Image (cartoon, rainbow, N blue to C red; front, side, top):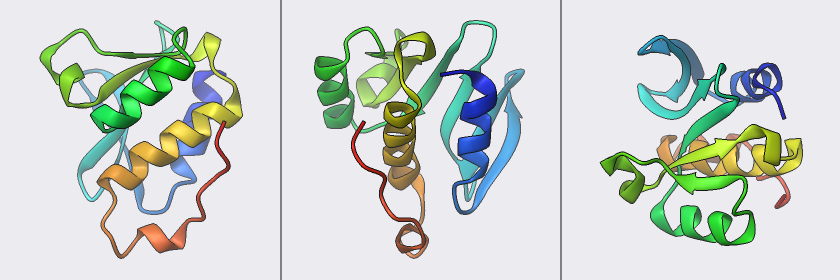
Length: 115
């Protein structure tokens, strides 16, 4: 997985806007961020629920981990792209998008298969 592909996937999500967040590209729906790319570090940070974070972390410990800051306890998750397939990344990003998207927008996107 690479940051160019992650960017293209994010921009393909309904209602997504790209903006800068502390010098990094971030992706949001209705001003609610669900993904930030850390291009130099080859990772992404996604807004998952604590339950989603725990499940993905158990199934893919090399790829998913809570961020070290306090927000990690609230579901913000580091995704190490070198250890993530495109399919798994898309699945996790879709979860993050659904976590912040308005309810009326969610039916416009079919859920991808689990990675």
